Length: 422
Ligand code: HEM
Image (cartoon, protein in one colour):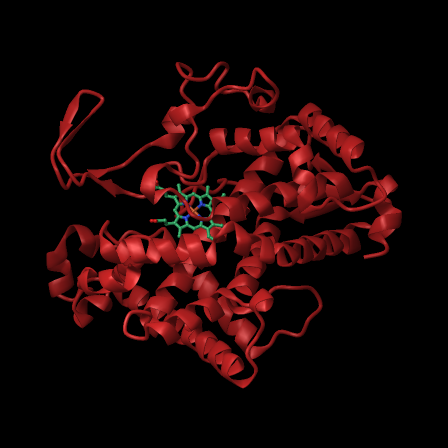
């Protein structure tokens, strides 16, 4: 069925338009609804982010969480004293390692390892991407400026995109060579391997351009979102120490202190899930969903919307609306726990809804609760001062905390025996 449809795929933009970095995303998460988007969505949902594949990468998530725990343990175990840590970069490195290992079988962040040239290049690209991600291109609003060559940001974006494309292409070549040399078994297949086998069956459609686009979208959609959510969740807990203690009690009761938490334990930790849901509600990392467009004329809230109108859904406003949520400004994970738990309907939408809903939800829900739960199980956490943490939002592609989270952390005495065995 897919192959019959292939001939009706939306025509991609002309080569000149590919030069504009934002438009390179055209063939992925920003692709308009149509056959082309449907095909890519099918690949994302059924091949790359299916529950089966998410399960296969379970070991990678576990492994990277252990590395994070070990790193914190080594740094904070000296004399059992509290150590001050900046958490956002740790969460970011964790999620980037997880994503890169699933996508291309590589990890670039770790302690004590000598930095290789490839690692240096990767980190440079990541830094530049973040420096430029929040910048608005004035030429998008005043195209005349582009014609007179005024737009410096576009130039920087184009140079960055070339660098990024070159790097990602080298990863594809590496996997291609490996796959040709000794075909890696199904269980150790990376996402690039999956895409390369699709390329073998249909090389005209699954070009390297398409594979690069998919890789970039997965990396950008899957990394900062999860890292940001972890930072918000831990910050909320530090401002609500009773909730933190309650979460630890649940973990101690269900898992104890003789083994580390595993993904299979998550189903027995409803309070931990309540904390994650409440974090999504109060601090959604995508407060305004990706722009949608009405495919037909329609009516929303009594307003008539013409066909082809861009619509921005402000989920932050819905999720923090006192008319929809009792005590909306209070952090209350209990609202999601037990028989009286609120039925969210369309009032809690951190992953969007409908056909463009986030396909990475189960991946994120494998990583985020396990990371947060493991940190609660293994360490004691405190604010660096008496005053509450500043919870204001900064600006960026995903909603960051304006002030990066800095905390005091030390291993729990009851866990030291286990931690020292990692
Ligand atoms: C905390 C974690 C995450 C949150 C809150 C989140 C949220 C979202 C939201 C709100 C959208 C747009 C939905 C819409 O407009 O209706 C989206 C789209 C998307 N997300 Fe996620 N996401 C997360 C993690 C991930 C992960 C881990 C991946 C992949 C590994 C991923 C891949 C994608 C992709 C590919 C799209 C585009 C879907 C399309 O246009 O068809 N996301 N995400």
